[in-house]
Length: 244
Image (cartoon, rainbow, N blue to C red):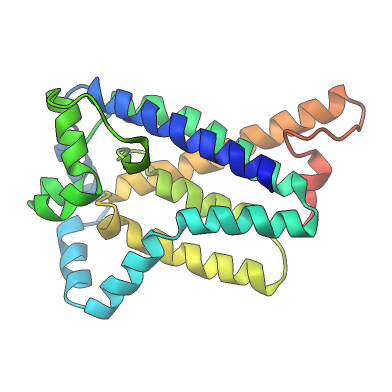
């Protein structure tokens, strides 16, 4: 458990710094294009935001769901550790690394302010990420606290990536798996308003998640073949991936 905890802390810090660097040197924003793409998909962010805000209980529940990613990571480390499933902890961590390696350059190439500030909810977005994003893009601030770094990625939605990976690595026929599925479905529903994401952000995040799983499975099979069936502590083996 300590091993995976340290790796997740290191990943969080380095990934946070990488996203801030990408945001500082990104080009023109693509919010208008993302809104137009959402419209072609039949989704209106403004209408969905209005629906959620008219139902305070729903908005509160979704706000809580949106903040559960870090607690879910901690839970997964402990849960798989107690079960002796080091392979699942490895699978989750390395698939997340792959997903981030795909996400970061896309986010840098197609930056966006996010739906909240784009539709005029700047004050609502500022405490979560917008104040830092503005400072980075305008080069008015150059020092940030590691403990206070915020998620700046719009497309692809990394919240969507992680929600799908949680469901994937907790695949099993037990109550924990069912709870994880329910919780992360709520996370997915919360992403447009809670994170100010467009629908195309979520679709691209889902694609990144699926591609990352496929790459991780391919690498695991490659390692398994090269080691003639000997398990390694890094990537999960093909047998681990096939177990439920």
